[in-house]
Image (cartoon, rainbow, N blue to C red):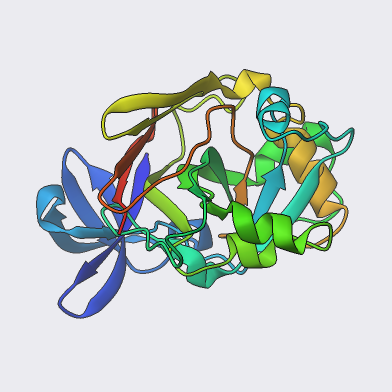
Length: 253
């Protein structure tokens, strides 16, 4: 099943996609939202980021080839940083470059949406706490990352619009152990790899993170990006695809 968050004349709403029709829900699906009688054609709604997380947890250097392409060592344990929820944007929204003199990179990632509150879960139990999967782009200002190293990634990762997400949360049809991630910039293929190459897979990430902090329904985990990151510029169109989820498209300005 696919779930969306969208705007109508009265504000944001949640919906379940059924045969190109959005059936409105009375709340977030990962909080038990139920269908209502209100429906919309899918093509007539403006989609938003399909999550309202208390926190966005991003995994760094989770693919060896990506760590190497930026001159970094692959970590023996998961490394993470946080993005503010204010960085979220949805399908079709613009990524805004705050400083044209900086290198602003794309990072296509599988997003994991937590469905149940969890703390200290084992890797064997971890997938029981996943509501579904989405697509995310961990937009990164490399100049600020370098300037702020080794103290943290906050400034380089935290600008408004630096976390495109969507178009849906898919609760089935996605294999987190072997999902193929593709990113194109202006229809040119720039990233294309499988989550099978993750150094730390999704159950291990949930085990690790839940050992540090409580994960809440709706929390979003960005699981790292494969090789092929690069700089975007105003006028570019970025499209990220994962089978079973769809395509997340965002222009750059």
